[in-house]
Amino acid sequence: MKIDIIAGARPNFMKIAPIIHEINKNNDLSKKKISFRLIHTGQHYDKNMSDVFFSELGIPEPDINLNVGSGSQAYQTARIMERYEKFIIEDKPDYTLVVGDVNSTLACSVTAKKLLVKVIHVEAGIRSGDLNMPEEINRMVTDSISDFYFTTSDNANDNLRKTGADESQIFFVGNTMIDTLTNQLPNVKPASFFNEFELNEKAYIVLTLHRPSNVDETENLTSLIHFIDKNSGDMKVIFPIHPRTKSNLDIDKIKFNSIKFVDPQPYRAFIHLISNSEGVITDSGGITEETTVLQIPCITLRDSTERPETVTLGTNELIGSDRDLLAENLEKIKSGNWKKGIVPKLWDGKTAQRIVKHLTTELWV
Ligand code: UD1
Image (cartoon, rainbow, N blue to C red; front, side, top):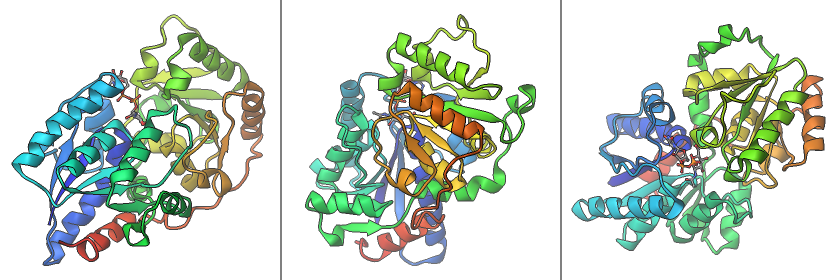
């Protein structure tokens, strides 16, 4: 059986790593060998947005790099489609496996499906209901044409059923991102700035921001960061700054008391940073899953989430752009008065094993 595994942007790398490791394990032990091509679209290309994740997570060198780079939504999507199409025509796989919700996910699933390649979507079925986010459109389009869905939650299963998916297409397997977290927890290590900033365990906050709605307007972004700076009390706020966010801020000109800007962090340093923090403020989706499993308080600066279990079961609170709520929740973090969460079903570090089991049974061709 031949599979194309697609990865394009930072959050994809944690999701494909455990699948590749399990496929390799299967190939060592079983007669049912899965051969795969790893295709990097090049959506993220910086060393610290891409390469460092390959080396830390033990992901092999991509077989193909589409080198698309940055651009508008349409430009990036179109370029990935055009470039991936050639490789399918040259050597057609049985399946194209896509993960998550980035432009690479949409572009490769549509391209494959039109060339009659079956599509497998990992992390299928999640919905925020907010069509202003490009990721929501990517999720909807990808799921509408996928043949098989590997899902992280009952909620995702229900969303898929509502849109007409058949039970035989849905496999509730859990969360591959949590496989990576579980595998890597013994290897986490402090970033070099940890000592330099004199950070103490449970005495600092981590901030990440990259959603267009939070970062694309410089004035709004600057005022948000100033607000967090003012309301963090004597806690330091470590802000690994995403390139999209950095391009809209003049960080050398603005002065803050508590906020410390650092580069986007490698996986192990980032997990070390959040797992030792007092709390996290973010607009990411994946981080809300990690903080839920690590039981770290998390404030999400969004109005909706495609991962509702991080709020209903986990340690996440959605507060939108309400500054009063932000101040109130920061106070709760500082006073150690945060809800205790539980870990969602099947977020147990064994998801990739279940995926490979399904690949070698129901999905075997
Ligand atoms: C993308 C994903 C988002 C994911 C996020 C994680 C889509 C629609 N969005 O958003 O779901 O949560 O990645 O990071 O697919 N840039 C660099 N170096 C890089 C990559 C990007 O400097 O390695 C710059 C580019 O110049 C670009 C900006 O960052 O202008 C944004 O990159 P892009 O891939 O378009 O989207 P993200 O905002 O990263």
